Image 1 (cartoon, rainbow, N blue to C red):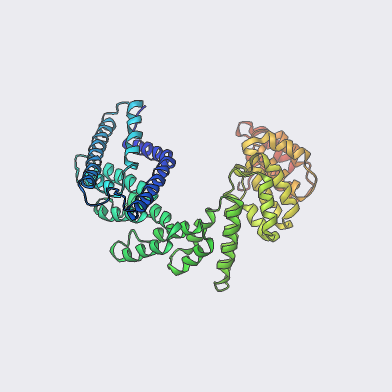
Image 2 (cartoon, rainbow, N blue to C red; image 1 turned 90 degrees about the vertical axis):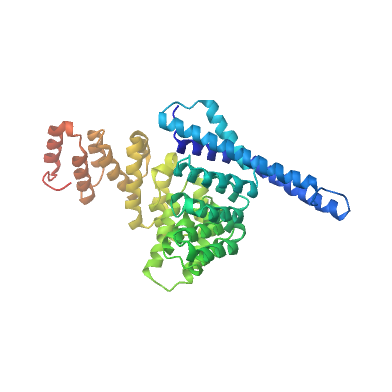
Length: 437
C-alpha cells in the first residue's frame, strides 16, 4: 500500500483519537498524584518536589525523553518523505511505527512538546509542508487538555505555520475546545491577537469560540455573535444550528435562536434566518428514527409553516426506509401549499435511489394531495427506467394541469434509445415536443 506524508499524518491523527481515552486516564492519574503529593507535603512527608538532585534528574529525564522523541520523529518523517518520493510501498510495520510515534507524542507534557516543536521548526532537511503538518498535529494534541499552552506553542511557531490553512485549523479547533470551559479566556486571546495576526484572529476564530460555547450554553453562544462583532453573523448562526445533532441539542439551540432573534430589530432577513435554520435542522438529521424526530417536532410545537420549512430540508439520504412515513406526516401536518413541493422532492430522490420500493409504497398510499404530488414526481423520475410504468401512473391523475405537466416530464425523461416510442407517446397525449425541456 502506498502512502503520502499527508496520509501518514492522517494515520497519526486517527491513532491519536484512539488514544484519547487512554490519555485521559493518564491525566486523571497525574491529577491524583499531584493531589496526594500536596497532602504529603502539608504533613511534612518528603515528596521529592523540592529543588533536589532527584527533581533535577526528573527534569533532565523529561528533557532527554523529549529530545529522543524529537529525533525519532524527525527520522520517521524523513523515511516517510523518502517513500513518497520513490513511490515505494509502505508496509504495516511502518504504519505501526506511526501509531507508536503518536502515542509517544501524546505522553509528553507542554514543556516536552515545546522541545519537539522546536526541533521540527529548526530541521530544514524536512519539507516545509511536513514540518507544518507535524507541528500542527503536536499542538492539536495538546489543545485537548491545555488549550492555553497549545496556543502559546502556536505563537512560537507562527512564522512557520503562519496564516495558512493548517495554522487556521489549529487555532480554530483549539479555541473551540478552550471556549467550552473558559469562553472569556478564549475571547481574550482573540482580542490580543487581532492586531498582531488579523489573518488568524478573524471571523473563523470567533465562530470557533461561539461553536465551543454552544456545547454547554447555546444562549450565551448566540449572544456572543453580537458581542464579538462577527461580520458574517448568518454563517455563525448556521454553524450553531448545524451543531445540533440530538433532539435535546436541537431544542436548546432553537430556543436560544428564538431568544437571539427577539433581540434584533424586525426584518425579513431575520425571518429568513429562522426558516433557513429549520431547513438546516431537517437536512442534518442523521441515523435518527422517524418516531424520535416526530416526537421532537411535536414537543417543539412548530407552526405548520415552520414544519414545512423543516420538511424542506429532508432528503431520502436521511429518511431512508422511513421515507413513506415522512410523506404521510407531511400530508397530515403541513399546510396545503407546503405539501406538494416537499413531497415531490422527497419522492423524486427516493425513486432515483430505489424506484421499486417507492412504487410499492405509492401503490398502497391513501388518496389525497400528497399522493397526487408523489405520483407526478414518481412518474417523471421513473420514466428514465420504465416509461410505460410512468405513463400508467400519470393516467391515475385527474385530467388537468398536473397530469399534463407529468406527461411532459415523462417525455423529457423517456430513454433516448427509444425515440419512436417517445414521439408516439407525445402525439397521443398532446405533448409539445418543441418546448424547452
